[in-house]
Image 1: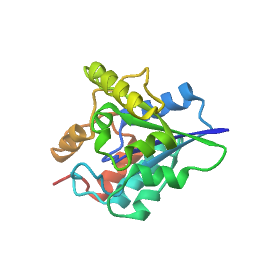
Image 2: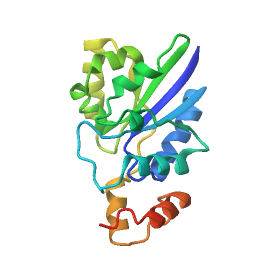
Image 3: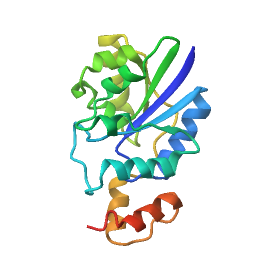
Length: 196
């Protein structure tokens, strides 16, 4: 049985906290493969920054290419990206899927398309943000009781860093230090992204 990790998101832009999470996933969960899946359009929020799916895909490849395989499944599919469709596409005999999500995503999990099927297709591991552990544990307990799904809080808190903060700093042309990988920052500058 091969164990495959899946980490989706907008990656708008990819940053150092994403890299930290990917390193942790590889080490903690003994993954045979790790896939990063940039979405085309998120179903539950507006996509900020007016950056194309193709640009976000390329930035993810530049940021994560040494740690994970970046898949263009959702970008190619186009339209709203639904996790359940991606899991159906990646599911095959002899493969155990492990889906990694942020705590904010889990707190809206019941709004996801076919969330019960997601929990049949994959184990789910959740990265909390500081201060949301109690709410997450309660939601995890409810989802487990309802679906019998294999869902747990990971032992690593997400860094207090968001793509929203970084987009604002880029828009104001403020330095971002090492918060954005250098190849991604060069790409952003060459394409004039996030400058408003």
